[in-house]
Length: 93
Image (cartoon, rainbow, N blue to C red; front, side, top):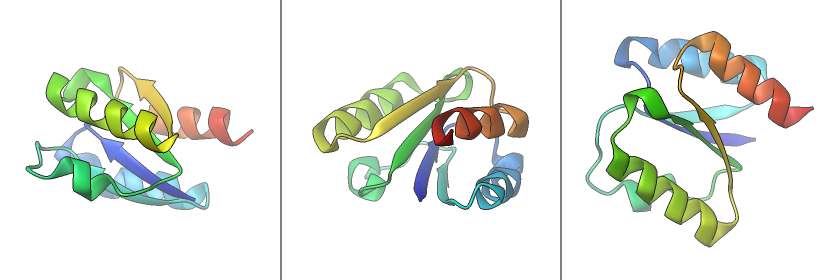
């Protein structure tokens, strides 16, 4: 399963990828604003939004792309590794 994570903390990128790996998922992480986010999202199975640490514009773009491609969106205000793990467990079960 492929996951796009938008938001979060730059120092946590490797932790996010490790958490995804534990759930048999592959992740791309975007913590900073990206010029061509629309193109970079591609067609993942899930988009995770850490709403507490992401710009409103990035959320809008991610949600628009998710709606257009029928991609599930998971949101969490917290951007911790435990929050990500909880989101994935809830989604996968």
